[in-house]
Image 1 (cartoon, helix red, strand yellow):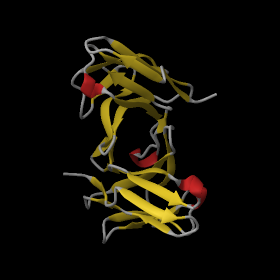
Image 2: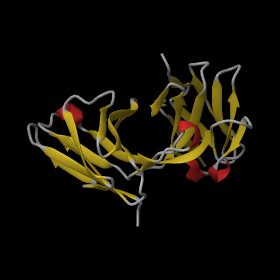
Image 3: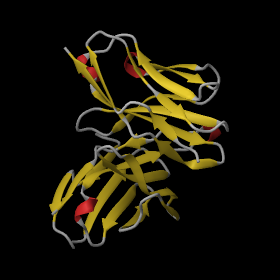
Image 4: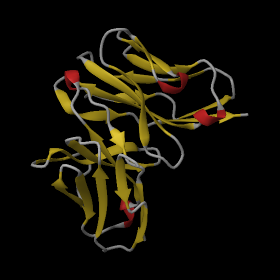
Length: 114
Length: 115
């Protein structure tokens, strides 16, 4: 079955430290991948997406992600986090042949501490 | 003004009551979605609509119904609310992009509590 798995439910990190939020996808068929962010008491907004082409995707707020076909991963990274990055992060995928809806990961809660 | 609005933002109701959550959008998108969010369970799709005449069940549609009154409006109803429908509900919209990959735009959410 097609799925998206976020490997960490919670990631605590200190301010100005680097962070990586891990996401794996399940299928070898063509897939489009997304990272969304949900700040406290808000809806979700798109951070970045991979459709095709360059495997390194840059998004808003200094985040980037790398599509790795051999590892079936799409990990999100930021070299130096801020307190304001504290939020819930969701990875999602849309698979070829099932393009009517997104498949969502369960989310990773990033807590940036001073 | 927000592109995707949801009303009400918060609602407390009692078991057995009928509840309607409303979503409006000014983005001009054809596709609209209703999700619920529960702690530890992520987002789960309730219903989705690709145009006014195309409405589809998601993974957890039991106990819910929807109405697509116009391109801009998509309502979610709980015919007889029960406590395990207590959750945060999100409406989202999208427009098809190249390669069938479309970004979803979310409303601010409705927090529903069923006592």
